Length: 258
Image (cartoon, rainbow, N blue to C red; front, side, top):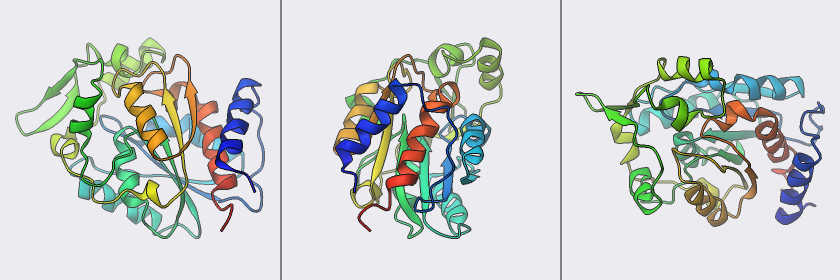
């Protein structure tokens, strides 16, 4: 059986050796199902580079399309996808999606959680309050008259997606999924990382979530953690090989000890 420390070391070694791009069929004993959950201001399309790697490596992958209209709506949408899985599942969340999977992760289908530059809230915490404790670097957040947030498109490329091609970042800046401001102030009622094994990828150049807040979340959850140099908040798009490798480690070892 792998220990948490050994598993984290194996992930780090794989990344350092550049082996993450090598396709490996999903082992028979691993979790076969993976559900990917996007964060605020975006939709599920950004997961495609990771999705492609995971599918090539033999996993069954679903991308949740939650509405960003309220925290409860988003959790319900993800649980609906979980109910469609035929067995144990790895639940992956980016950014605000981490708050969603921390709640939805209590579902009996979920064998493990993977946080990608994501909020991993404890019960009673909110993203807004934690963000004040660990301030981020962006000043781009704007609010509509009816209470939805977005990032000023002029600042989006530098603040959200600095390591993506300019044209791609500019397109995303003008194709944002506006997000209810209320999701950032809704207190968490479940912290599934307390009962489910977890993995965490820190984006070291993140301007949307302070990397030190990401490190706090990872340490508190006792997550198997990697840090990705030069990674913006869009790390799941800009570094899909590293992200997919971490998800596969979760799939291969989430059932250890069960």
